[in-house]
Figure 1 (cartoon, helix red, strand yellow):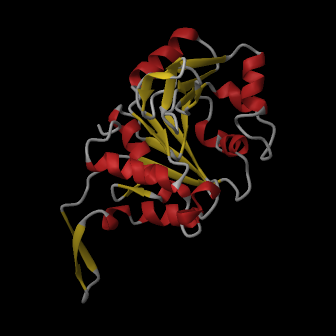
Figure 2: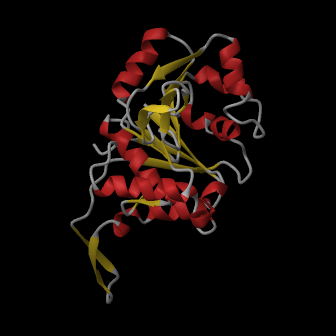
Figure 3: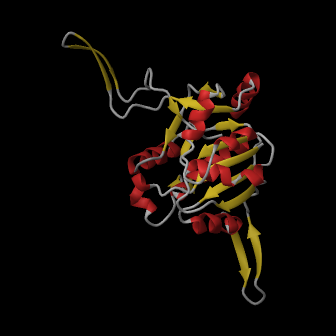
Length: 253
């Protein structure tokens, strides 16, 4: 199944990095977070990627254009220009890079990829969130209900510790627990092609009119993912994800 990844936003909340590179290229463990997301899909056999680009699109294009040389050792014969790869990373991913406009909103970016997707269901996610979600189970859930859109609902870790009281006595202290409620949209969508008709133009955010229309039609379902999910919104998030990768990151496959 084809996988669209939204990779065109400005990433203003991560301005420590995004002044020079697009947010999906900010690294975790020495690799762009975009690579980690794609690797998660590839683990489940979904390797046909469509990257919806915008801000600093040329840097993402350059990364994949030169991917083999950037991620392998090689010998260059300067007399002939011949390049011999050494220990090349052998990936069988197919990556289509599409400039969907500098200021196009998320819904508009999806709409612009309609000609690439044609009349097929497709997967969609954001270029800044990693998860240990089971894509096989997500797909099974989507097929079971027959609706137009499935999104993955997640419960992110709380930003601060959670205290519970009995009077003034602390009865429970949990440092940054999973929230008991507060399900949010974690991306990792599966979408039927009819959804394109719910997006009007470049100005529409995916999370506004298009998904609201799906809700009104009774066509939006949520796959409740109880496991790990984390979005890289801030420098602190990036530092946390890097620390996880150095140990045993939950999204490693």
